Structure formats: structure tokens, C-alpha cells
Image 1 (cartoon, rainbow, N blue to C red):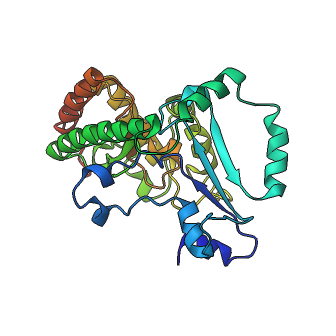
Image 2 (image 1 turned 45 degrees about the horizontal axis):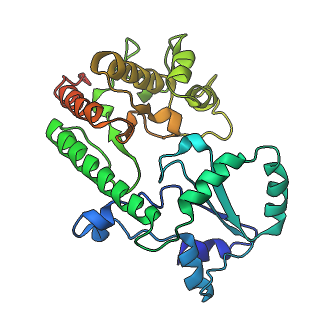
Amino acid sequence: MSIFDWCQSKPGLHLVSDEIYGGSVFAEAHVPGARDEHPEWTGIGQVAAKATRLSSGALGNRCHIVWSLSKDFALSGLRVGALYTENEDIRLPLQKMNDLCSVSSSTQNLVSEMLKEGNDEASWVRRFEAESQRRVHERYVLLQEVLEEAGIPYLPSGAGLFVWLDLRAWMEYGDEGHAHMTGSSMVDPSLMESIAAAAPGAGEFMARGGASQGGEQIVGVPSTAFNMADAEAERRLYLKLVHEYGLLLTPGASMRTETPGLFRCVFTATDDAGFEEALKRFARFGASEKPSLA
């Protein structure tokens, strides 16, 4: 059963398909046998077409697609996105809201000129997409080789502009010891401020669910959420990566991860010289001594 069929079987449940990385799937075209490891990219419209037996791929009133130029075209500065829905109750109020935050006329003209060539393989869009996927794959392979040689665990990827790193082995706990084992710790007063500065949204997450405060778990926060000792250790590692190794990674807390020590590495956000330097720094970090867990 597809996710589309499953959602359709639940009365009142809506499916929102975020396809912002739909054009950044690089494994299929550049890695032999990649489809065995990474399923072929399929948009929800194609799934809906099979489910409804309609060539038009009608989504119905409870399936919606969102997409943006920011990832596939590296045009986040244009602030252009799109929502496709067949639900009039959703589309009409959004059209009204769009009057208050509409895309400028000059930007609309630029985007329409960029996309007007069509969808055939010879169009500029398809040529750009193919070249982008080639370059992203090329960088991914280079980063992958350095990470494996340096002994830095990561989550293999076949799409997107980043990779998840597992840096738990480098996390250091302070004098409170491994308070994450017992659920209690003393927190550095600057913790919330520094985490919020490091990654927007992380401080709020820690405040809502970092630790069971007063013995009570905050409503709506999973029991697996970070406690204060974990948050402090991840924050220390984040600052160490910045100040000692010159590596700016996104701490997992800001991405709502349930496990401390996971960091997001965007490997497409610098030029070739900066990327080559980053690889050297990763190699140096991987060779650094891991703290003792004793």
C-alpha cells in the first residue's frame, strides 16, 4: 500500500508531499546499481495516477504538493515557492493571503523566462538539472571518501544537498558526568542563548523538551527528547567544531532530532576551494582523540 492509498483510507487525513528536493536526486543517474539501495524518485502525482487510474494524476481534495526554487535551482533568495492543490477550500484562502506576500513582478518575469522552454531533455531546465546532479554527486563522493577514511560515521545519501554525520563518539560531558543516564544535570546558564545563536529554533526546542523539569515531562515533547546534559554536550561539540576545526555544521537539536550528536553537513554551500579545505578539516577532526566514556 502506498502512502497515498493509506492516507486516502483514513477519513479526514491530508497528505502534504514536500517535493523541494525532487530535482536533486543524484544517485539514480550517476551510481551503478543505485536504485537497489535508493528507491527511484517518484512524485506523489505519479503515485496518485496509479491509484486513481487517471492519466491526469488527479490528487483529490486531501493530497497537496509543495515545491520551491530554493533547492533544485539554488535560488532561495528569490523566495518563490508553489503549492498545488485541487481543494478549493484550501486554495481560495491561500490566494487571498497571497495578496499580502506576493512575488514581485520582476521575479515572476525572471522565473517564467527561466522555465518557459518546456520539459523536454534539450531544455535549459533539464540541462541545468543534469549538470547540478552531476556536481552534487561528485562532491558527495569526495566527502564520502574522506569521512570513511577518517572514521566519521554518516548516513549514506542519494539525494539532497547535505549528509547526516554521527558525531556521538566525540561528545564530551562535563563535571556532571553522564547525567543523561540518570535524567538530571546542572545546566550552564548560557546554554539556551548559545544554542539559539548557533541554530535558530534549537533554543526553543531545548526549553520545551530538553529535560524533564521538576520531574514532569512537558506535554507534547517525546520522552526521547534531549535532556540538559545531552544538549550541553552537543553544544560543546558544535563550538569545538567551529573554533578548533573551522567546520560550521547544523546541530541536530535545531532539526528536532531525537538523538544527540547528529549534525547536518551541507556540502554544496561553498566554492571548490572552500570545499577542498573543508575536506582537510574533516580529516583532521576524524583523527582527533575521542573522549573517554569511562
